[in-house]
Length: 128
Image (cartoon, rainbow, N blue to C red):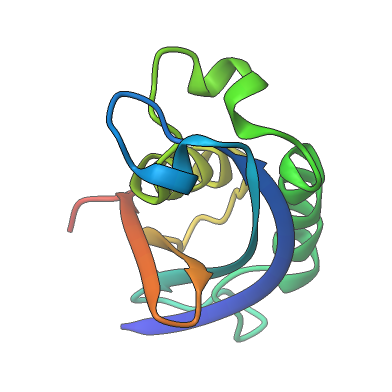
């Protein structure tokens, strides 16, 4: 299985709802680190799993949606606690819709909110 990973950093804000988490219940910022891991068994005719330029462009478009925004105000978080886990899933599903590569079988978003905590979500594109 081939794996390609692209990493980006961005800052976004949120506040947690539905429980008493102290300061986390107030709006605050996180310096997020998004690791996008792409996997597939076959390379294309050029020896690539995916067009990395297209992947980077899709990733930048997506991050621009969240960079410097309050996640709680965005429609995809309506009714959800904007947890790290939900955010990783939302990002993975959006990237799966954006990245078109016939050899791509799965993608995983690993989202760090600081150097000691991350959540991930894997989206399977093909069953083999």
